[in-house]
Image (cartoon, one colour):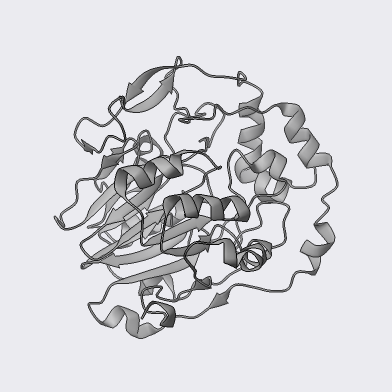
Amino acid sequence: MKKLIGFSFIAVIPFFIWIMKQPSTTESINHTSNSELKTIAPNEEWKGTPLDDQGKFVNLYHPFESSFSDLLKWQTDKNPYKEAKEKETRRLAVDFDPETFKNDEDYLIWLGHASFLIKINGTTILIDPILIDNMFLKRDSELPFPLDSFPPLDYIMISHNHRDHCDKKTIQYLSENHPETTFLTGLGLKKVIQSWTKGQEIQEAGWYQQYQITDSTLDITYVPSRHWSKRWLWDDNKSLWGGFYFRSKQKTIYFMGDSGKGPHFQDIKNTLGAPDFCLMGVGAFRPEWFMHQSHISPSDAIEAFNNLEGKHFFPMHFGTFDLSDEPRMEPWDILVQNRTSINGLLLEPVVGQNLLKIEALK
């Protein structure tokens, strides 16, 4: 098969096994949440995160529907973007100012793919860190600074268990070197990552639940996405997937996580408000007929952003790892071509730049 070294080994091989076992529809018969966390219910009917009759997590609006024939078709069909992909020489720009860590000002820094380093009101947060190459994931964009230059981390957040968001070696390194950190993630993820840590606290949230954090001026809520989870042969959808919504007195930030399109974007806006910054996944979307249930296209990301009524659109989940059929920088090209349809400011994707300090935001 043509893609086994790229996306398929870290996601498609488990996906391959998973979809052969899936029914075409799944009826939700139960709901769950973390009783120790506060819930911000999106509506009066909200009972918690939905489960199917096997106790596995399911999406809110779109049961996952696929088949082995779909996977086989993608793996064996000719990639119409192959030539353009092979000729692609552009890389993500990298620009980091070392002075960023030398003062008490807030920052929002993209580290590539879905990894972000955030400082809000003195609280330092790292999202979905994939910082160390392994045999399946090789970076096409450099980290903006060395691992030993990271500031002390208060929280490390993991959106879901897929290997391009949840990396064992990275978590082991961070746990060893940031002993005071706390991990924030979704229901079922503690079982995945606990043995990789040095005994740090791990908080698991259901959708629309707020984590318990020390800064009373900052709220962090785990929010829905349209996706799925699996790392091994036996754990399909036993842990939850989602995004994060940050609210301080000064700003709000929405991190999408991995998601296909759906009404949940509107729900998030209606429940938590329109975000100042939307960190939107736009890559690993081709072929769209296969990927659309898991990853949003740049065009659909624009529609989702407009539904969120955000102020600043920042594209992520492209340019760092080779996970799908499209050329590395095509998602950004599509966004630029459709800039006028974005009801907000499109921010240029520069690894290492403090998005809170760029000229356009002054």
